[in-house]
Image (tube, rainbow, N blue to C red; front, top):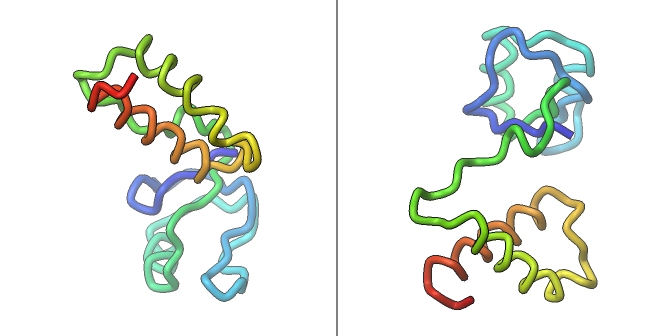
Length: 111
């Protein structure tokens, strides 16, 4: 799943799934190539992100702060995983919550 935030969508990207407004109405179908009009419509109807073909979640992940040691981050994520045992981390929001908690743990020396 390649969810891309509205501000990062670009003209020419192709939708992997339908884009729905906040009320569940379809605004644009899967397979459509984005143009400026589509981006304006998404903004108007409160669309926050779109699933883009050919983009993995990992490709869309925000960069780490410079002061974060990647090895320490992995250790912090592993230490925090038991807190996610009932909810898992398959959903992008929960995966991001784990990432942010691990960053905070590393930055504040909570490891």
